[in-house]
Amino acid sequence: MSQRYIWLVLGLLLSFSAPAQVQFHTRVEAKKVLAGSPFDITFELNNASGSGFTPPDFGKLQVLSGPARMNTVNIVNGRRSSSSSYTYEIVGYKPGKYRIGKAKIYADGHLLTTKPITIEVLKASQKAKVKEEENPILIQMEIDSGNYYIGQQIVLSIKLLTRTNVLDYNIDFNPNFTDAYIRELNVQLHKKREIVNGKEYASYILKRYAFYPQRAGKFDLPAAAVTIGVEDPNAPSRRRSFFFDPPMKRYRMVTSPIEIKVKDLPQGAPASFAGAVGHYTAKFYANHKRLTTDDAIKLSMQITGDGDDKINEAPEMDFGNAFDVYDPVLKNERPLRSEERIRFQKHYEYAVIPKEPGEYSIVPEFSYFNPDSQAYQSIYSDTIRLHVARGLNGRSNQLTEETGRFDLHDIHYQPVLSKGSFYLFVSPVYWALFAGLLGWIAWLYFRYWQRKKIEAIDPATRRRQIALQKAKEYLKEALDTKDKNSAAYYKAIQNGILSYLRNKLGIRTSQLNKSNIRQMLQQHHISGNLIDETIAIISDCDTALYAPNLFQEGEKTLFNRASDLIAGFEGALER
Picture: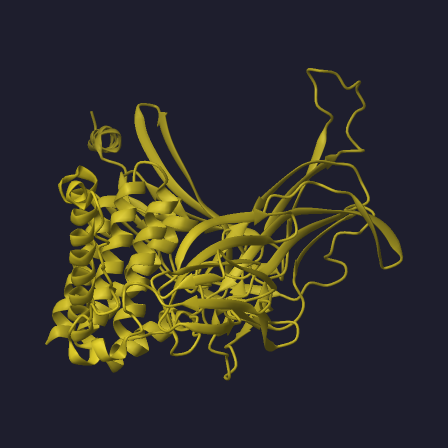
């Protein structure tokens, strides 16, 4: 055998035994695309098992969907090859050159990267557009018109306009914001008629979303990609039956992105404003109007509105020095969903205790910011007239309060002695009344010294105690609802932290947003770690409430973080 044949045989043997080369590269449909025309880009790993895939920076190109992952294995003539691919659907709206960075993946213990590529987006010409006769379908994204403010509900709609029979549709729309959140509304397909460019279309709202910004500034809402299936008029005709659907032709269409500029709320908010932005109604009720200084009024307030219910809280009620008003209690909360927008209803209850007897008139109020008029508006109740009599607690006796003694002179006991009074002293009824009187006097002493003890506490210390107590109550509520309602669990944790900060630092409810919280905590010289953890927990609760599929942390871990955070604040603020 000649030397040439020996080398040929050795080369064939080596080609079968040598392992296939590991490659990680990029595939793209075209390096030049039309503006507004979606295209696919694929990152492919060959002949290795990969993990920890990291997509590249797409710059100003928008990702419509992806990654769609696919694994394949081929065996040809005894040789085995494999590949894993990650495919994205991308679109560019403005002409220009765009750079797509490096994708990364780990394979066989090594970090592999792709090479950056450049995509040129060209201006779409009239010839490049599909003729309306061939594609009589329009897709539009619309939002509420007007001015936009923090805490306002902005309704976003995806609308289909068609002049042909639509059989199927699918929407890819996945916005993700850290300073805003989105809720989807339930809509039904209602047909309307619209005239566009002189032609009549059937109009349908396919999806509707409520967008709530939580900071001022610019928000870029991404485009929505919609796949529409229509009956194909060019397909071979066949009779439709139970087993066969009509032949379809599919169109992939993309809406234009939308830019929203959100304003901060103007100065001059009334004292009864507590974060409500939108359109509201309010009703007020008092459980009774004749009482003593020992009694408390239960003042109920029911508000209904369409703003951000997460930042809308009960306003502070101030009826002057003649009354003590305690923190409101949320008795009931429920959403009122419709196809047009999300509304909610909250029922709060205040405990109001008069200090002095007399005739009083109180007028509860609730204020909100109306984006339409761009002004604060207040809703007042009818005047509630109260007749307050002196109670048995001695609450109105200023001499008693000043001297520190409890005055019993108003208590008169004059036993009437008559024939047979001996039997009164030895009867069980007498001793029962006597024991009741002693118990009542002891109770009055107890209430008096308890009130003096509370009044002796330094106001700052008392505020810290109230803040800690409120936070513990909300965290306990979270534990109670853990196995019943996950949404209530995360809401209670978030309310615990917000209530703690409101009472601890004197932050008004309307100022409880992330940027203000950070600024006020910095003014109190709180460490950066505590501030970052506060914002992180509030954001994690938002994620768990409104995007649970993106929330990866366990419930117990989040609860422990909230408890540790409050403990950290206690230590930081006591120093």
